[in-house]
Amino acid sequence: MPSAPIAIPRSSQERAVAPSTSPSISSPQLGVKVLHPVESVDLRLLLLENISQEAVATFRAQGFHVDHHAKAMSEAELIEILPSYHAIGIRSKTKITARVIKAATKLLVIGCFCIGTNQVDLPAAAQAGIPVFNSPFSNSRSVAELVMGEVVALSRQLFERSYELRQGVWNKQSKGCWEVRGKTLGIVGYGHIGSQLSVLAEAFGMRVIFYDVLNIMAIGSARQVDSLGTLLSDADFVTLHVPELPETINMISTNELSLMKSGSYLINNSRGKVVDIPALVDALKSRHLAGAAIDVFPAEPGSNGAPFDDQLNAWASVLRALPNVILTPHIGGSTEEAQRLIGQEVSQALTRYLDYGSTIGAVNFPEVDLRALTSEQGNHIRVCHVHKNQPGVLRQVNEVLSPYNVEKQFSDSKGEVAYLMADIADVSLEDISKLRELISRTSANILTRFLA
Ligand SMILES: NC(=O)c1ccc[n+]([C@@H]2O[C@H](COP(=O)([O-])OP(=O)(O)OC[C@H]3O[C@@H](n4cnc5c(N)ncnc54)[C@H](O)[C@@H]3O)[C@@H](O)[C@H]2O)c1
Image 1 (cartoon, rainbow, N blue to C red):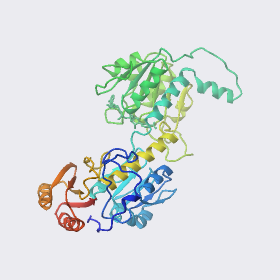
Image 2 (cartoon, protein in one colour):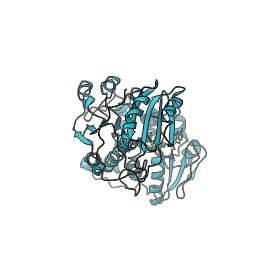
Image 3 (cartoon, rainbow, N blue to C red):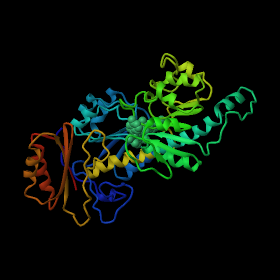
């Protein structure tokens, strides 16, 4: 992709804040030079799928032109409209295919305002010099809170009692109902969600143990155990917070369920394939387990209102009929707070890339950043050079930069794509067009941008 034509930079007065290179765009730092691309007069952003108004406001406050639509767009619509935009924000319904990327000749960056990124052809985007950002951890707290709710609901058979009363049946009982205070919560996977949950569970007076493939510093009085088997045999509640990996598929099956304490509970808010559900059904039917809460399934309906039946998962009707089983439609991370956080996080990542070149957090790109320029470095420019990952490129580019003082530079590669950032002193606007021409002509060039 050729570099974009030079144009007059936007006024720095348009900027509400002056961020450092990598930290939050919304936290101004004194003495930091505000950068913006010299390539584009007016950066145009297309936001689809009703992305939060906070994100729209963040972009507008940064001086970007924003077009906001409530719906997703088809491939054909994107091919028609996207060539006039520099950035796009989507959720999970808009598919950014290789054809869309090929047509979007001005596109610099893609923001997925959600957790997943498989709606984007990530290799095609990287090869076109387009980093893709998402927000994988904004909903950790929401999941942790839901799990605590499920721990209490299972141990009090809350869903059974509520269902009975809705049917007009009064059934007050204490048999098989327990406080959670003093019980043991076993957390499998002590990452973003598992560790948040650890804090909440201790506040409830629970004893917390966890198992993780990594050695992790425990929070509070939690204790790491050395094997999954130890955790399963010691916990009253087992909750799963691991990613889906070849080694975590069916990590809870007949053997593992048999290791769990009689009368204990299983909670899965991680990924659907982590639990062998027919084995779980057997453990619940035999009353070895006293209950389960399942938020994620091996196959999930594509839209709201679609059936959750045996055609989708062969065991669905059996599972639905079991007592003290909480079934929820993958809502672990679905809260308004999480949506707001996603909006803030992804819009800041896009702005940091467009204005400062930082690719920290990109899913398909080498992660590169540079220390911020200071306001005294008025005539410094930043070169952002995306190129094919092949030998000899740095020599060629450094030869072009050799008449100048390169104050700092950093480069990294991922797969077929590499990214170099460099801050250069004493460069005039005329120098920039000469530099652009020379760097863009190098054989491995994918995209070269200048920030000043
Ligand atoms: N239900 C929902 O709506 C929802 C929302 C957000 C995340 N999730 C899912 O929750 C899971 C956890 O998310 P997170 O943000 O805490 O992830 P994370 O990457 O922060 O933590 C995962 C932890 O699991 C550990 N781990 C990996 N393989 C393991 C194994 N074989 N045995 C034990 N530990 C192992 C890792 O070392 C890591 O500490 C993910 O699968 C994610 O997709 C679900």
